[in-house]
Every structure is written in C-alpha cells, then in structure tokens.
Amino acid sequence: MAPVVWCWPIIVVLATMWSSFAPSAQEAELHLADGTRVRTKLLQLITSETSRSADPVNLEVAEDLLVDGVVAISRGTFVTGTITEASPLRLPTWSWLWWPRPRPGRLTFTIEATRSVDSQTIRLRSSRVKQGTAGIAVGTRRPTLMRWAHEGIRFNAFVDGDYMVKSQKK
Image 1 (cartoon, helix red, strand yellow):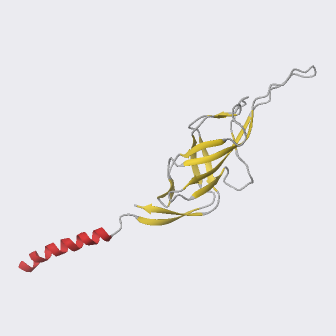
Image 2 (cartoon, rainbow, N blue to C red):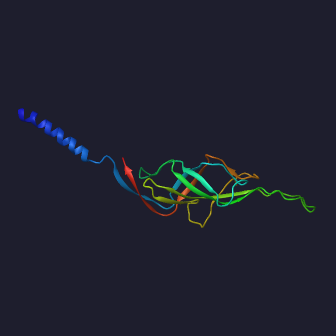
Image 3 (spheres, rainbow, N blue to C red):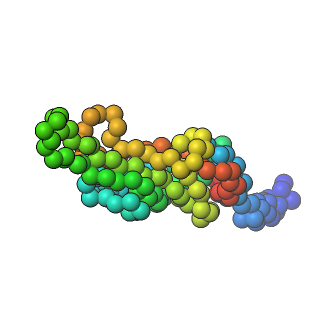
C-alpha cells in the first residue's frame, strides 16, 4: 500500500506536464474552392442619383464561411466593391411627335475582395461562373425610375479562384 500512495504525486505531475504540452488548438489547412458562395451585407446607401462610376462600395461578410466545419472567412469581415455603372433618371423634353417617356436610372456594382482568417486576400466575383466583368444590377425587379440599395441588403458573392486558408481548429 505504501508504494501506491508514494506514486500518486508523480502521476499527477506527469499528467499536468503532458496536458501543458498538448496543443489546445490545431492549425488546419482549408481548401476554399472556386465558386464558393459568400453572403455579404451592404454597409451604405447607394443610389443611381448620387453614385458615380468607380465610387467604392462598402460591404461586410454577413455569415461565417465554414469549410469542413471550420471558419475560413469570419462574419463582419470588410468586403470591397466598386460601382461600375451609375446613371440618374433622365426626363426627356417634350416632343411634338410622341409622348415623352422618362429613362430610368441604372446602377451596377461589383464585389471584389475580402480577407480570410489568416489575413489572405480572397478575390470575389458577382456570379457563380466566370463571365467577364459582370456586376450586380440594382433594382431590376420592379419598374422604378431611380435605382437604389439601402444599408443591410444582402448580396451573394462567389470566390474567384482556389485558395488554401490556414485556420485554427478548436
């Protein structure tokens, strides 16, 4: 009985040392595939009346992007975009030949890039398939004269290319 009591302190010390050397979080290498959807949220009001081509558009990631259950892009990460086309409502002058019709405004923007959890720049595009420089056309579902999108509206963006992201597994 005496040798067993004498061994307990040594076992406790060895168990404590073993647990201190074991890593609590492991680094994982995640494959972020081309075309993966990233949900984004607009952080500003954009309109066809006040916006101009090449104006910046501020967005953020609306939901964590998970790859194999591990976060690759965190919610709240800043996303950059650019307005590619903005033209205001045009009211034509009266003509004696026909009834004048107003020309509705146009507003198109692209979503360009964000950062992963390892601070790597991840390029984004506006459509699932690669198709040139197509952007997101705002306000095309209803026949309105002025095009606008307010803060909080969500848009889909898609990863442009394959990336290897290093993330912490918990």
